[in-house]
Image 1 (tube, each protein chain N blue to C red):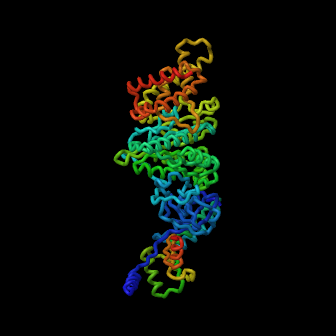
Image 2: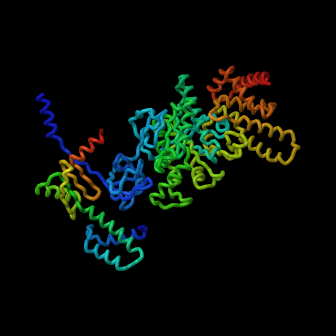
Image 3: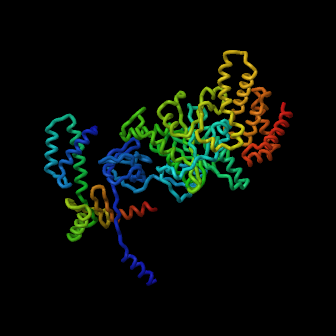
Length: 510
Length: 130
């Protein structure tokens, strides 16, 4: 005991107390989620500022005599004259697999009532995108399970594909379908013990949406079993503008962790139009000069630095990827507005959704004529490339002929056949929501359509034929589908087998 | 009052004119303030407001406020003063004050820099760590 006392006494005698220097400032103005702080001469850009009462702010404007801070919390608790301190830390969020299956806010704090999140790693919200050396070109597909996308506008892992359209055209549905498709593929690989399959984890960032809409999305993800592979970052309409503007960056940080650790992730930003509006609000409150449509001058940089963080990195750097599906909402189909044109120019392609098509019953309401994927074809599965190679051209021809045919009734047999084929292809591309189609089935259906098996089927019964054919293959010819999935290409032998099976089915179908 | 960028720029130029060897010359500052008011220009008040803010920040940068729970001895005061001059250079005004709520230790503030070695700050840090 005497030794212990002596040891502690020695430790006390040898201890040196030092007062670390802190940089402080005084709150001069608070309001609308923004504070102006005098002092804070050492504040860094994007540094977290401790505003007292457990409230944090983010330094966005560094002026000569004061600092403009956006408040991440309840600003009504702050008072003029209060003390603010720099923290020396940038805004960061927890990352890792512990977040999967959870709903979090911008700071990575759980808001789903399922208890604390186990994570000991943090990533800064603002991070420089991977450089040229680290990157490699896209070469692995993201199977969305949506037939027109997988066949004609393929998306690769690491790509940035914009989903653009008016309100109520099914933009969110496409993304939710893609998340569900990934969950099914992940689960199937887990069950089969397939170690070659690269799991694709998903992050859904809801920006400025109604709480009820977010709750509905979460319910769908839970019902379809996609939640265990998904992180939801929610910044609803009731959140402050600062939170809404930062939420996509927080989501990107969570996705980057997967990429940096050699895994694949997919992030959905729903939607960036609302984020731009939130950023405009913050910028105007911070008295930054405004430009076109009152957006600040750096609104392009806001989106480009966010979307540049989606990448496919080389094998030397872990071989991971982060695929981004940003959503932009247009007003009356005007894609030439400021924010849509900005994001179109940043992304590697876009999927246009049209209100007219939606009301005609074409769902997903994708306008395949003007939708493109600039890099995805390199990642497309060979089998689907073989069957869908001519599809886009055929459909373009069909649209042209269909428009021409409206003016006259007499058509030559070849034109009529092309129009009939086009109608049937349009029919097979119609797909119910939350029902992604496995790629093998897509190959079979498109192969059947391309080889004239649908030509004798009345247009109104094409969907029925497709459903029965799918059922026939999944219930009776599972081994052929498995073979197709394994080989990933249509060899002559496989084609012959397909022919036999589809002929067999055709005889039974009435 | 809205202070335009032009007014801020002019106030900054006038503030620079008041510096002698990097330190603010009080007489010059007074003269500048009087001259600005004498011109009677439309934006003279906004220039003067920003000029006042710059002078205020300059004064804060060159003033060290040393607070302690109990009065400091003359030796300790001179040691603290010497230490601060060593760190911040000459031209530093020191002001000693007593604040019993610090419980013990010392709190020094020079402009935005705060060195808080008080017992109160230690307890606050401990509270936060829980």
